[in-house]
Amino acid sequence: MSSSASTAAGGGRHGGTVNGGISHWFADDGLPAVREPLTGDASADVVIVGGGYTGLWTAYYLKKAAPALRITVLEQKFCGYGASGRNGGWLYNGVAGRDRYARLHGREAAVRLQRAMNDTVDEVIRVAAEEGIDADLHKGGVLEVARTPAQLARLKDFHAHELSYGEQDRELYGARETAARIRVADAVGSTWTPHGARLNPAKLVKGLAGAVAALGVTIHEATPVTEIRPRRALTPYGTVSAPYVLRCTEGFTASLKGQRRTWLPMNSSMIATEPLTGAQWEELGWDGREALGDMAHAYMYAQRTADDRIALGGRGVPYRFGSRTDNDGGTRPETVRDLRDILTGFFPSLAGLRVAHAWSGVLGVPRDWCATVTLDPSRGLGWAGGYVGSGVATANLAARTLADLVRLDSGQAGPTELTGLPWTGHKVRKWEPEPLRWLGVQGMYATYRTADRREALTHSARSSRLARVADRVAGRH
Ligand SMILES: Cc1cc2nc3c(=O)[nH]c(=O)nc-3n(C[C@H](O)[C@H](O)[C@H](O)COP(=O)(O)OP(=O)(O)OC[C@H]3O[C@@H](n4cnc5c(N)ncnc54)[C@H](O)[C@@H]3O)c2cc1C
Image (cartoon, rainbow, N blue to C red; front, side, top):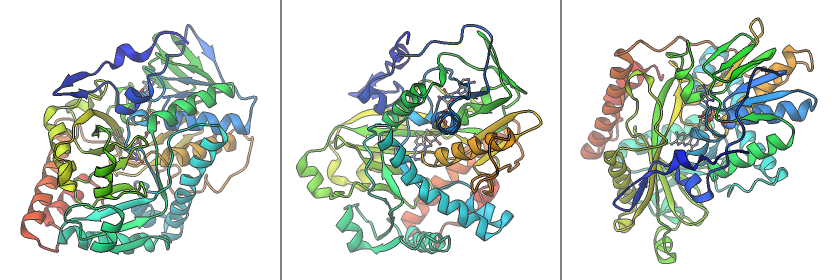
């Protein structure tokens, strides 16, 4: 261990709100000490670029399966610096691209993917318990609410659609049943799935990094990889050579040489309030600590934290020109205000509540919005990601799949259920060059916001056509 990460993460302060500083989760739990960087050329059996959930879970499962493997993780800052240390803490069974995979590979294949995702929620909980990682996990499911007639129509479609993928334990609630769980203003209905848990993302990623290091995986932090070549990862401090190089860089992928248009770095921003009082919680309900979301086009996601705050997120500035990524989580004041407005729209009685912290992070969006796991045997290159907004559980399934692909290719094991999942080896075209990329994404999110406003104003039960057009232009459907 060497220097502390705290220099990277002071965070500004505005009206009593800490802005940036990586995330509330790290502010709360403490930033980790940074592990030693690489100090010259090295070799390994597998080198993993990126110390988020994807990279760390891949290292974990590979090392568990083959303890003799020499695995090196190279992380540009510190493990959890990316979305894995900043997210909304929804560990849930959503996976980006399922419907497209159903169209490409058949319904049965997509149902297998969905079942694997359902099981993944429990797998993360299982390993956390086994490894003694206290990540404030609480399996209260996910409650998604509708607050306008158009949202209610979408909610009912969504519910039926999920049932068609075999999720028979998903429920549909009316206004009264919704209020019995969480009293959200204007809620007219909701759907609840048991396949979800809330967690503290930074505690999970810190615990996972510790577990992986304890297994004997080498982790070099403060070590940016500038380029990935077949069987080599290049850094300013030396090159690590290995038969397999696995790219697990998600929203930061564009910063690697040759990858600028691979996955678009999309921003998501969050706020965490100060802790609510017992009386405030009594008014809101939320005793089941469900992950809470809505059916707006520019959707929100929230959780009741272990220390009784509300952490709530949504789209901030969705995308920065030229695929620029990060500034340690700094967030525009307008975005903080927008998120606060969502909070008080949901819970008007919290109008006086202080926002303690605001931050942002980047997630990776492929051109067709489909999460993928790939190993190219001829070059020894693998990658997993493109989870869009649902990577907390998906990264675990993707990592197990990537680990199985490496073991299959190296002759250590045969094909598994996971290597046969429909997202394996999926190919997607690159994003458009600038300025088309920037214009497209800005336009899409402006359109979603307009569509949400229109639906709220007109009280129409039909989803705005605008949003459907934006979906098509963006390549989402
Ligand atoms: C604000 C926010 C809220 C979210 N909320 C949720 C949620 O509630 N539920 C959900 O399912 N998903 C959510 N997500 C998405 C989820 O967090 C991510 O999909 C998931 O964490 C991705 O993990 P990862 O390891 O693939 O990527 P990351 O966590 O981004 O890890 C990539 C790592 O690679 C490192 N890296 C990048 N480039 C290099 C390089 N060149 N050299 C060395 N290291 C490099 C980075 O520093 C980083 O640590 C959210 C994302 C954000 C930003």
